[in-house]
Length: 136
Length: 136
DNA sequence: TATAAACCTTGTAGTAGCTACAAGGTCAAG
DNA sequence: CTTGACCTTGTAGCTACTACAAGGTTTATA
Picture (tube, rainbow over the protein chains, first blue to last red):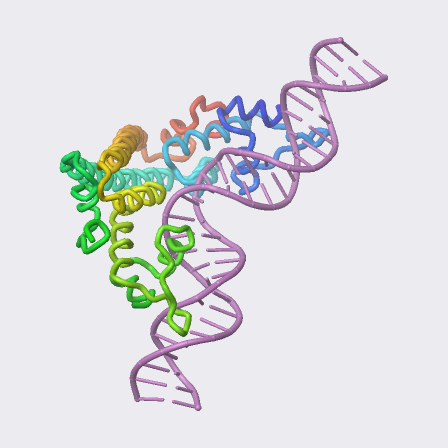
């Protein structure tokens, strides 16, 4: 299976696959006589795992660790759980930040009086102490 | 006022200020005889505006436009309002995405049975069709 | 058999928004 | 007059790709 076929199988781009190989996330496959990469089913599942984890927002480094862990069948899954929880915490933090941001933006927009730039409340609100740039 | 003072005044790093100058976001100030940048109050408020807008998640390009608009006092503030609304829409989209992500992660973590890697539900759930990498 | 289209190869540079150096110049204090 | 804290430029690094250029391979068709 060549790189284009793998790309279609795992819903990725060929360039991304080469990138993953370069950074050591996906093992380099054997080559055909014509120097094409020749992938197996193992590559497909490893790449599919990676893509799914990326969709869920795990970083490349976290995925690298997860893939390493996945190969140690006898170990406890504590470390896996820890990575997932760590990521969840991060997602919750971002949610809180974005929620606050949303409220701020809505308040900003709510102040618009549809007048001229000179009396624009949005620009005023953006200039914290509003010394000059929006009023000078 | 030199770059360090401006940095403290606008809660930024000197390197960031130089970067903003390089990309044309902050106008290049005059220089002292010793070739130090020499900033005025106008620079402080422009930078403060920029930082505030960055904190609210506006892109550098959006800020560039906002700063341009802020100088056209007679124009209507429609364009300003449009940029803010566009950004709010984007923030809402991200909130929805992150919310969905959070639910997925919570469900993932809720499945953990604290056993071995071989029976790890998190890893299983991450491998979409779970062909081999997590089970082979 | 020729040739063109559709693939593949490598390497490099670009994206956003900074941040972190290195190697050197300037300035204020003691 | 030296020490240390500043400043200068230029370049490379960060994340996770994406896009291209210049060339080689394979496959289909005329």
